[in-house]
Length: 187
Image 1 (cartoon, one colour):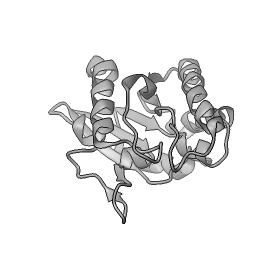
Image 2 (cartoon, rainbow, N blue to C red; image 1 turned 30 degrees about the vertical axis):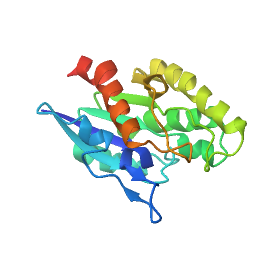
Image 3 (cartoon, rainbow, N blue to C red; image 1 turned 90 degrees about the vertical axis):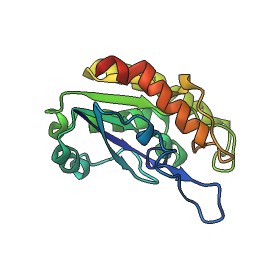
């Protein structure tokens, strides 16, 4: 059985902002559950508000404790929402995935999050443009360090009113794209 550790932000966690008191989608809706199979064990380490870790050691021990066959990373959205550029975000990601503590992992999949859209959490076209640029920077980074890469922007992910979070249909489209374009190819 292949163990996949998913490190990400609220879209990996399964955050649901639709109610008065925001919560979490049921497990059966979350993309991390939709990619499970008899051949795949999924460890969901998504955290609301998580940015690319500035200090890799904070996450290295947790990742290595699980000894995953594949580390799937989808981070960067919160960096952009907090005012970092796509270049700054990609540089932080480079420091994270090339940290000595992660060098023993057999495979890393770097996922570019889908581009942001106008919404209640997204102010101005600049952050949207930076979110579009991030995919190209992550693609180059993955090639440079020997990681796998996928661009969730190619999977037609439906986002909610805030311009950031996946709808239930978005979770399904994300899982389908990830299975089709990446996971079914590497099992």
